[in-house]
Amino acid sequence: MSDQLPSRQRDTAREITRKLQASGYEAFWVGGCVRDSLLGRQPQDYDIATSARPGEVEALFPHTVPVGRQFGVILVLEDSIQFQVATFRADADYVDGRRPTAVTFTDARADASRRDFTVNGLFFDPIRNQLHDWVEGQADIAARLVRTIGDPEVRFAEDHLRILRAVRFAAQLDFEIAPSTLSAVQRNAATIRQVSAERVRDELLRLFRPPHAARGLDLLDQAGLLREVLPEVAAFRGCEQGAEYHPEGNVYQHVRLMLSLLPPDSDPMLAWAVLLHDVAKPVTATRDAATGAIHFYGHEKVGAEMAEALLHRLRFPKKQIDQVVAVVRQHMQFKDVPEMRKSTLRRLLMRPTYPLELELHRLDCLGSHGMLDHYEYLRRAAEDLSQMPGIRPPLLRGDDLLGLGLTPGPRVGELLAEIREKQLLDELTTPEQALEFARGRLKAED
Image 1: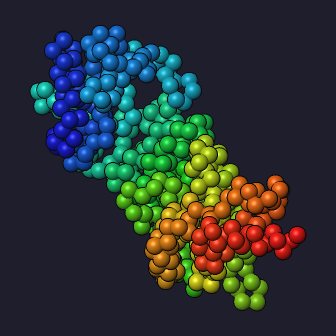
Image 2: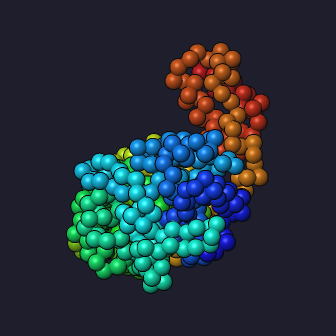
Image 3: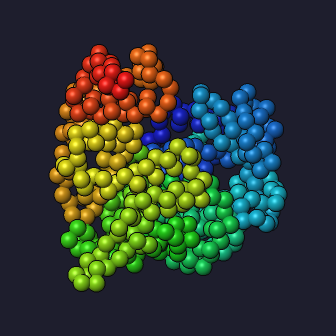
């Protein structure tokens, strides 16, 4: 086993396992932490499977949360870290494609056999340093395969989300999906519609992360799931673009290339901005009868509406929806930045979504014509603006104008906007100058 778990987390996990075993129970590390350690990766979290019943786990550890007590799952809080401790179980019939109707507590071997994929069915005893493999998971790790434990039809009928998880694991681990498992995913792709939007969203968020986001898109398409969960994106395959600006090919190839260039640890919403910035191209595409040129007039505005509907459908939080929708709506403005008025450019640079917009623009260029001249222009403009901290807050507020005798009403907003425009053009640089300008305006209107 690899020793790459952060030492504090690993030591605490080992101590929980030791305490369970010392109390007469079987206990093992199980699932992703075992798989990732065998692959030389640092596990992100850590689960323990045990013969101890939920009440016995609660009696052993002072800080617990019964998150799934009826299914034998208890959270143990130790050293400010959460560990899932689950009793060995076998599941009864599944009737909703998500949860078993009941569970029966059993032994470790039976518990391994009811899990989803062989690579997640390995048990490790950190006290005796023994690996238990009752599902041929080691062989599939060596062959770099995602394969269901047992009949894939049965596994997918139990929990329909597993068809999407098969794709996510294959992308995340850089594995292939075993042919029999992939065939079953393809046959059952439509059942993903029965899974809650929140569960699908969470899997897609994991799928579209660097460095495996582009492969995740390909596998989703290959598995027949893209048309089920993101039909708007599936339409990219048949949407051609002009070779002058898009030598890489159609919209699917463009977006795929952009996903492959996502920076490590980038904002998760960047991947969704990439996926959706051209979402309306298939529905706005027109071809000039005389020249044969392909146009997508207004695709950014239509795309913002489509992106909003799609993200609502997947139950994204409102803040993230607003963020991505704004970026999609505004992404075409970047082609005009050298010709923008200074005030317009500065407004762009000060938008809350600007960092995400700029990174999308960079990827958009690298995923097409490759020219970064506007990107570099914006970087220089942003650097210049950073040297002028006084320009970010407006020079005056409404109360300042009311103090000059102006009565509440539309004129207050109009005058504030005029002052802000002159501030962004460097024509007014201090509150005193702005007040003097306002006095002059009001005097002229008397």
